[in-house]
Image (cartoon, rainbow, N blue to C red; front, side, top):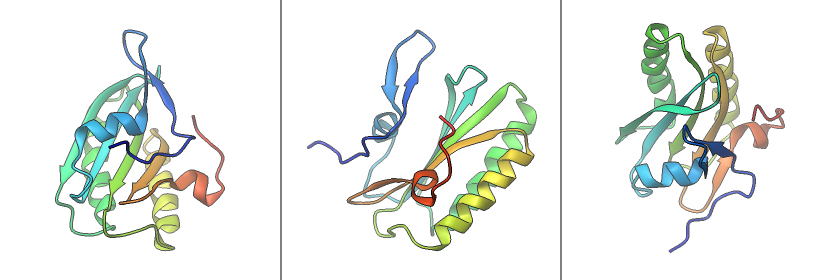
Length: 140
């Protein structure tokens, strides 16, 4: 069954020149019925070099806990330059607090010298770019 994904989902270039859709990559890593958070980390050339999947997350606010883990990891790896976060929330559609979460995450990673390219919220029926939904300019 094809998965619903936004037309604006970014296309990435891999280390061997191949291209792929970021949300398609995430779809290979998750069970869409299980709440989880995926973080894809990129080097300066915007090549994905690491991926972290945290399963069984308890609430939409768990994105802050995952950001703590990623931020500590980034301190030990200064070559890492950017990231994408995808919150898989089958039972929690986007909510007004997500815009505050996006601003907090953006400021936090900008302060750490790492660019948060986007944060997507993946629900049963939608894949939402929080940067796009908030009207912020694209970082792709």
